[in-house]
Length: 79
Image 1: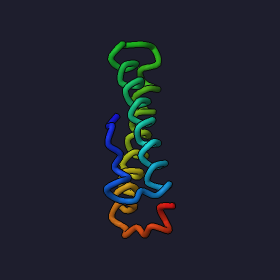
Image 2: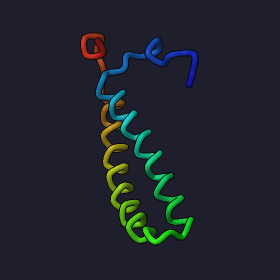
Image 3: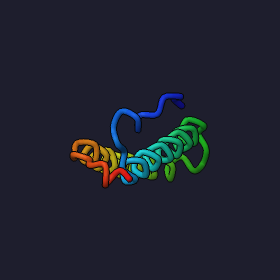
């Protein structure tokens, strides 16, 4: 984690923060599913199926984050 907050450089809305945290949590879940698959457990097929669904969801959320970051932000929205 950075000791220099980006909020000093540009205002960040709650939507951006929530979307970024959701993506971070999904990356952790993706890692767990990959470990299940690589471990060769009996649940590997279900883990692979979950990974495909998760990947699609993450693509959608990345698109949403890009939209949020591209939108002009006013100080009132950031507060």
